[in-house]
Amino acid sequence: MTSDNPAGRTFEVLVVGNGVLGLSLGLTLARRGTKVAVLGRTDRPWAASTAAGAMLGTFGEVTSTLVASEQGRAKLDLGVQATRLWDDWLDQLSEETGEHDDLRCADGTVMLLNSVGVPGIDSANYTAIRKTLDEYKEPYEDIDPAELGWLDPDPLARPLMGMFIPGEHAVDSGRLLARLQSALLKAGGTLLDGFGESLTTQGERITGVRLTTGDTLTADQVVLAAGAASQTLLDTVPALGGTIPRLCAGVGVSVVARVNPDVPGPTSVLRTPNRAFACGLHLVPRGQGHVYLGATNAIEPEPADVPSIRDATFLLGCALRQLRRDLDTAGIEKIQVGNRPVAFDGFPLVGSAGLDGLWMMTGTYRDGLHLSPLLADEMARRILGDDTRHDLSVFQPVRKPTQAHSRTDVVETAVTHLLATGYEDEWKIPNAWPAVIEAQLRAGFAKFADALDDEYTPPAEILAKAQMNPAFAQQVRQYYAASRATH
Image 1 (tube, one colour):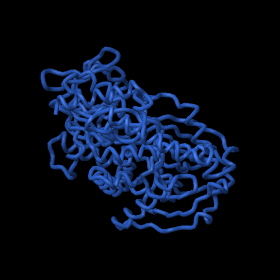
Image 2 (cartoon, helix red, strand yellow; image 1 turned 120 degrees about the vertical axis):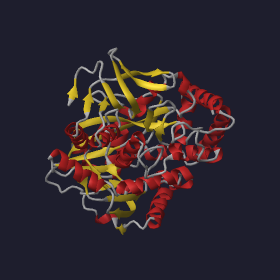
Image 3 (cartoon, one colour; image 1 turned 90 degrees about the horizontal axis):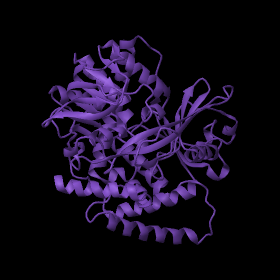
Image 4 (cartoon, helix red, strand yellow; image 1 turned 45 degrees about the vertical axis):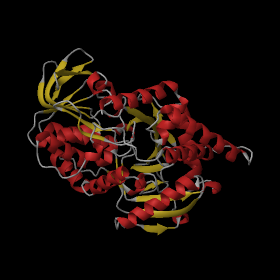
């Protein structure tokens, strides 16, 4: 059932956030007989799910940086295990809702290594993907990109290598959200249209959430699964300050385009390795003459609710250059913006959050939708006191800042990725200037990192944003200071 008047309602579990993660957890709890409600605005203005390409990929997301740390390896392993859950997850959703049209919209993933990226990112990540596929004995095959009929990039941006990963598909995120909502209601869960303003507490225990309308929802247990917007609620409990890494937004712009239905389009995801602080350029077929193009990534202190012209034009320019030159004849169905939840140390926040009855399931950056079946089951087990299946201790919310890489490595990553944005944006500068710019960037980032904190260094994309935004830099400094005071 739904409720348009949530005032005075009491639940066993209140899930704050109605994106894929929040709905998946609500559904999992409702299936187990829990009196659960999922709270969120129906228009989802700051969600990541609504703008997602929804690639069910683990290996396609691998980077050389990810596999170089224990924490990154742990996240990778969760992703591999989540992949194995999706077939049964989708089948059960169809059975429960009676809606049997396939939510999958792509058959496998084609990884492309083109001549646009820089070797220190694209080539390194492409190699890391292959190596990780081999380690996990995941099937893949090398292909000749010239044989991909639909692909028609600028000759100077043509792919040099390609591989097909048959086990990494994609779903339509909008239809997935609708089906999760339908299944939740059929399982006896409640959907509440509203936005949380603050957490309510009594002593060391959570008691519920106060809404922006002034109404209060009461719950035995509250789960923050509202992505980057979860930070707003955390900030209303001063005692939690510094105990949990702060969240910011990885703002991403994507485009759904209407293409010529008479031209046979791709049936698989087409994508490059992750690059330049962002996802790789990717295209996801959406059926009936539509394709999804994604996605930019810009670290921002606050979530965005409208796409920027800068990011939209950059994305479309990359698609025209690297995928198909006549995409400029396609129609734009919609331009979307989403906010990936990014913790200040770059890793998920999953588990008990420092108050009795308060939980978090966010900070998943690019992987929340893909991890949703696994995390929903794990969180439900923890909330209900059941035996757990996965070790999530490295991602527990109450923790010191995770330092997965040395300051030197972070600075080097920031320099390489910032330079890469210039090459992808086709900058035209004298031949000797890249080396000069690189030296200046390295010196500048190193000096800034030293001034930011004596001990901790944030991930490269957060470091770069902090250097450009003094107010954001102050947030990082204050978080580090508060963390020392509480741990």
